Image (cartoon, rainbow over all chains, first blue to last red; front, side, top):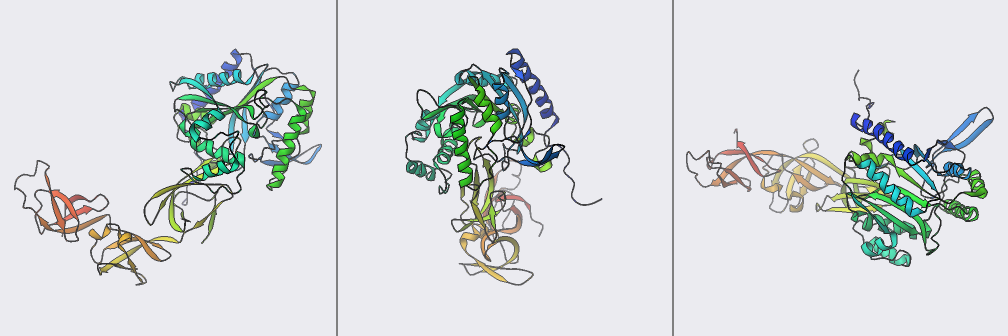
Length: 328
Length: 189
């Protein structure tokens, strides 16, 4: 036989496969010790995120009793896990696959592994500390991390970008983005796009390589499913955790008000309609669960492949997943 | 030329940016978990060699640049331009000093050079990686002093000055790596 060799081999080495297995055992021990229940929810669901920056993939499902129904591969297990919380599960965690169309790069693969967990009765700051503790525990064998730092989004943007993200005019943001080291045509970028560009270029690049940096109090316009801060409603109880400038986790003090949640979903749908994106159905089971009462809780999703990559000092996600999308 | 969207950009692609040809040397997909995706592209300007970075949105397009690399034979220079010929078609092009960028101090008539053409015009000329050239001027080094690793400057027939071992004499040919400008060995001619 001649011709091109078929790429059948994994891109991850055996060491990475072994370390992944060990890391899964370690994180299960971490949560078992803390009394958090492991759960499973469907990867394929009729309800999905409406977030304008996420591109859910879908499949046509037919089975006895189900006639050609469009179902979505989850972009995260958030909706289903909140239904469990509303049903009285108590604190829960899940390790599962998530799928996001259009995302491929050094630290992105359209299919990736998420660790998501919820702490009932906890506020967001307590969860932030647990996230840092988990990361430090899982990286303990490979890295000596400096103590985690916790900084507000507004403070970081003022310090490193010279911009007050909660007050600056869109015009000022546009100017700042256009003046950056990696200029971008700002037409068509809204206020949050501009903020996210500035944050990525001016702030994330300053994070110390060997420590967990937790950023909290994101602008209310980027609240997603976080509740607004009671003390400053310009901000939301949303946080992100980084090691170096690699974004690892995104968490919320969870929004439990069904009316507010419905309004945000309608806003997302309007945004999707305006930008010509697909329009998944309003997640009515999720909203019904909120209506019956989501307990006070905080939750977070963490990209496990990236954490494994950090642990192994890998140069890309391909080094830690057996078969990235091109070989899948 | 074709346009490329952000799913098509890759290392090595030649594109127009600011009206000038660039070669992409890296591209990074950047996407916050909850935020707009961007592609950060690092590219080298083929006219001046400068490396620039720019960020693109998912809907942005990059226009392809008509840039090809081809082997051409060096014919002669009139002091201002250097003339090269496509050995298959006999088409001739003239390159200026900016395109030569130093290659002129290595090349000799009939050398086959790698020429980068943009819209048919040469923008970059690379001398062959190795050339054998005659030394036209060097100090007569001390005989027997070959083990000390000493070196001296030697001027070549094409104009370049390279460091050579002390035993090399005027009139000898030497082999040189034009990428580093370093002496390799005595020539065979």
